[in-house]
Image (cartoon, rainbow, N blue to C red; front, side, top):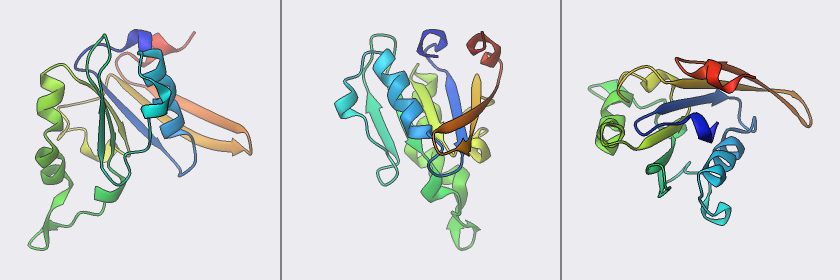
Length: 140
């Protein structure tokens, strides 16, 4: 997957807790040259950034923002994503891999080049459904 990613790409990862989203990001980051000891889940920090020879890689986890109230009680998911500056970073050429990002694709700058939905099908088995404009590049 790392070989098909280009600067400015958006990858959306969806799936149940424990389905392997962060594991997949760790593998992609390693393939892009990031020391795997640096790679952790951004659940509480929301964004981790890594430098790669190809482009900056932003690993984003929007799970904690999914229920951000919209309207008088709060700014909503789109506003929270805008505050993080993710669309701008993508426009500058960063590769964004966003866990739980399906509801924020517009705020992230438009449809993803790759969308992966992971499902747990057994104790040690996962199933991946791949879509997006370059999703077919991942399927052999």
